[in-house]
Image 1 (spheres, rainbow over the protein chains, first blue to last red):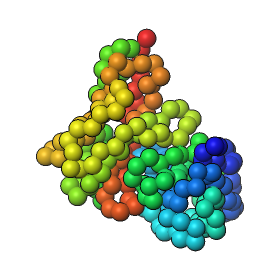
Image 2: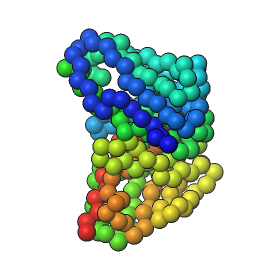
Image 3: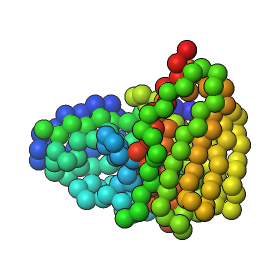
Length: 114
Length: 111
């Protein structure tokens, strides 16, 4: 099992550019989520999905879109990047159907928006 | 809004000693808590969880204590090892599918 994989590891964008952060898991987990982690702050939930075709907003969804066409993949799209979106992004999945229990996190994508 | 916090941002302990990492939470309705470990450059890793109907739970070398009266959570690591050096943070479930995370405490283990 590869677990939760994320690409790219690092990305630099200019303000206004768009991009997609990829996330995939091979554990057949129904629940997947995206977080951002900023210095001095805890993880904040951006979007989550409880299964293919179902997504919902978390604490900080503005400026991000998600889709869940398959159980394995949960991409995060930045529509028009802003410096405030400079952060480390983590994707996670869980067999429990929610964030309770063991969430498996990917290695993260470090994004810088200039 | 209410948020999870930590008493100390850094903690330094001698190898072999026990470590205690504290967390204060402010949402009295939170019913479930998790401790995570995050090593440099990696994603968070689940350590242990506890439900609000418990006040103590033990794992391998770790114990989580929950004091609902003062809204306090602690993680005890027995016989701390160099591999335990990391950032530790707690999370509370404030509502279904809504976990709130603390900023973390950096634990450094001195050989």
